[in-house]
Image (cartoon, rainbow, N blue to C red; front, side, top):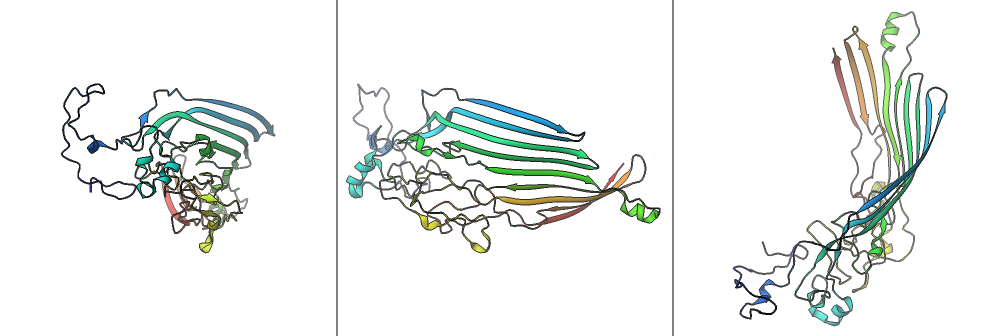
Length: 373
């Protein structure tokens, strides 16, 4: 079906062969013998705004270090970034919702051609790549590095916030007021704690040779991560705004968002046994011809509580030879991890709206033997 509209599934009919247009046709010398309607509405790939400028970013950091004893170093840092003139997509030929509503059955969701404004109904959706986006990031970073008595520990904590207008070109901004698209970045991670460690278990002091042999060479290592969740992206792909911006590609989403009544979302960071992550009843489809009042991202989903660990033992056979036995476990406590950018369904048209729809892998254990020579 080469003439099917991806957004609606409607067929546009066979358009070939097209009538050829003779050379020399201009605005001053129009060609009246051609049925120009066969080429309309004119729709193409996103165009580049001729007024675009070069994006730039400003970065700053302040850091304090303090050493405690011979093996411990603590660092406190403030990190900031401000980005300007970022490249985003903006609809340049939106429809007029008021005009569309006045036209009755001739205009509606996914069919706003008669109400197109800037370039008129002869053009469909025309998206410009414009350098009008901006973003900022601020973070407090704490780091502890400790090495003593067989323990090598690196622990880091970040408290941050990232705000922008778009997660990238597949996510267009509001054509009426681009500032209304400003919200949490898709990768915003408010709190993140990560600690990695390696501990050489002390040797057993015993004259029993067998006990000494069995207890020597053991080590314990691992990585633990405790973090808050990523923002939930709210979607309303019903084109209820009548702006005609939905969608800009097969796998992309438009600018419409749901309507939020302002009530408590009753956020649940532990959605086991089918419990919802947020109260979906607090959202609804906005009235036809209006934008939803909910920001695309303004709250976060479940976080992560994970430990990966390794227990190993090395048996030396000489200066250059050794056997190493390893037992490794990922997600040691088999804790369900509902963490990820698409873990929570944010599409209001989905039957699972507000629920966790995916999870990370359960506990995985593997063993290995390595001979080094």
